[in-house]
Image 1: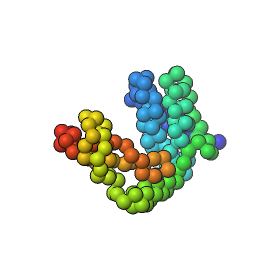
Image 2: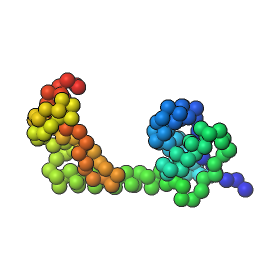
Image 3: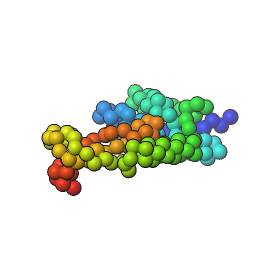
Length: 143
């Protein structure tokens, strides 16, 4: 019987993990070109990737069989991301902005209360979530 297995963990991913960037290492592993026997592109769940990378760092190098429920197909992942983007757009439209909102607030860089831009990013469900407020003065310095 021929079982599909996840790709081996690369040395670069192991180095990331060993440097303390464990979630980044798991995400890098998820982005490898994992495929089922029928060539369907899959993306392991973050927990699956983390466990595989952790095992590799511990010296366990045996192939890991791909099991149902440990991944999403690339098509499923794309559909989820598309839905999050749709929700993001609707949320921004309802809030009356395009992903950034002009206002007066405390700058996250200089900590002064000034006019600037509040930048949003989608949360895990795609809803607009405030991320960083930058005053106009600090924005000029970072460009």
